Length: 185
Image (cartoon, rainbow, N blue to C red):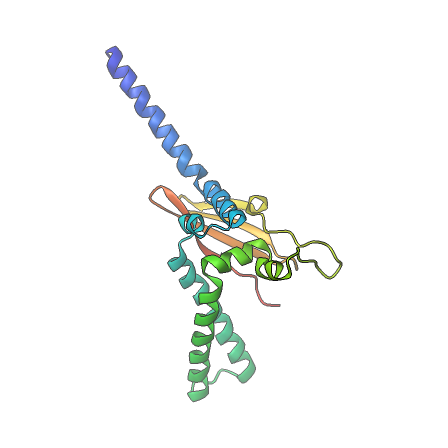
């Protein structure tokens, strides 16, 4: 091999290693980007790291299922008019809730630990014991790759329930695409 061919091969290997490193580090880059966007209150930066249409669809499906199950549990498994009305109600309620929750402002509120209330009060929120409620730190989550294009970061809510943030890879970029909400108690 000539010297220029060896140099070209080394450049290709280096480029492949750097690309692989970027893809592997992608979920942490996305988590850090989300954390930075929330800290800076930057909707534009948040939109770079969150796939809002997919996130809305995933969270909407969870809420519709929960509302429908709760309705069925309370009134029984009615497949008649009452059951259809319950399904329609579940969809309407979940659509409104998801539109409010899965928006740039809603995600910021979620990750800031009730930032909206803190902003209104003008001071940090306190829990029942008077301790300051800290913002959510995605970097403190337990993380794992579920596949080459799916990554999860799980945090515990204040009551100890797991909340899982799901990141999916599309091309070279990783984005938040689902949040598995804690089970109702």
